Length: 622
Ligand code: AMP
Image (cartoon, rainbow, N blue to C red; front, top):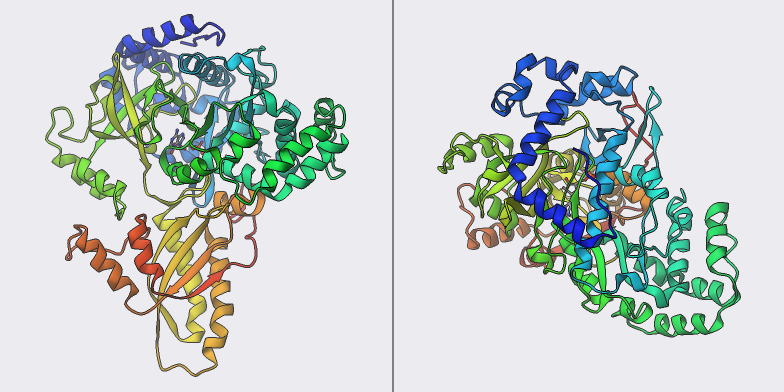
């Protein structure tokens, strides 16, 4: 079922949404039927189902196991090495999408097909009519969207492996999109497709500034990217204004197609415009800068749910409180759904999963534990704990922790999302925890709660407890020669400056009485510890830090003896059990961070960027 949506046809598009959500169950049945019949001859499905089984949802659920990436990785690697797509998919796998979730330190590879690009286009096209229901006149100007591509590699079989958005922006679906007057960008495609991120950013901002009078909305995919753009503008506004004043583009913009595209827009010197922008940027405070520089902006289009919620206060500051709109929920595995009420407050955003995108199932997870995860101190559940809590759920259909269907989920309940896609993923655990907030017709709506296990995230990085432990274990060895032991650690994502950075709190103990000169060596060793932690984190972290520059240098703050006891006292005062208390490996509440910060004896920063290069198969470290 591949649907078309004409973004110019508001009524037709919204009727389609009504049909899909009204008939959510039937659409889901049909989708599963299509996926299974299409892929009946794949090696993977043949391993579980016999010929008649493909028609029965119950048999599919009984016989095909719920899997995670480690389970399917061998199949995907075989395809990357040149074996036929038929292992998992009847349709040819045309590329592998590198997810920001990692496995063994490397991005996970999600299979994709040519047809899947059309499914993505369908979802993108729906966003326009949905928005038009709430905001008038979007055809009277342009959107300033800061969009970027990232590095890609070729697998041994010649398949491209790249992030999902890079794949989409490079596809003909994006490049040859039909004109839509509601969706005109200030950035020429050449600037988005420029492989040099710095030139791309500069040129997109320059184009956005030149066309400032036309800009009706400002956006990026994630909040972190928009804030990075504002920081970039803070650092480059004089040069940008000078280009506008003189009608020349800076010499360092050397990517020719990008340069020419900008010159096409910057046709002549415009000193009046340069003066206007300079006047605003010269102000001491950049409060409301978006409203001041682009005065017609109606809303900010960036995802601010999940880990991006940490950026809401900063975005409010720069935007002067313009509505923050999170339009969609998607991943490398599959695009899931859209926000049908885009002007809702960020804290109450719900996504409606579109039943034609994939076959969705939901593993119930324990409500109390999830609420705890969302709260002050997130104890990260391991899967054993999860399973145990699932068994305790007394609700019908959820007793055994069995995966339920889209229309069986219950308001207020928490679930882990499982997808069966058209691209060769069968009952695949995405790793996201969602909570049901209500229904649109018969289709449930979900609040994105969190990504399982992730303790730290600044941009697209997703560091989990094990990654952090591994990195800390590596780094703390450097303390041995000085006679120090690391007794406790925790962390938080500090986003008070742009770009944000990881902060680790460490409590140290001297093994023996120290000689005076050791303290002198400590700063140097601690800096080295910071760098070692960074080197040991996964490749997405290192790419963000070294290539995208979307994460700042990692910091370790050493706290006085007793700092972690104070943290424990605080957690217990908030309801943690003394007996079961485990030091949280990430602290989220401002109060907890304050307690540790007030006991800091020394702060140390990494003084070099970690190594990173695009993944090459067979290499153990990149
Ligand atoms: P990737 O596989 O790298 O494309 O990342 C996809 C993941 O990003 C999802 O599984 C979510 O964890 C997260 N994500 C995507 N869209 C949203 C959203 N609208 N709100 C919160 N998190 C999101």
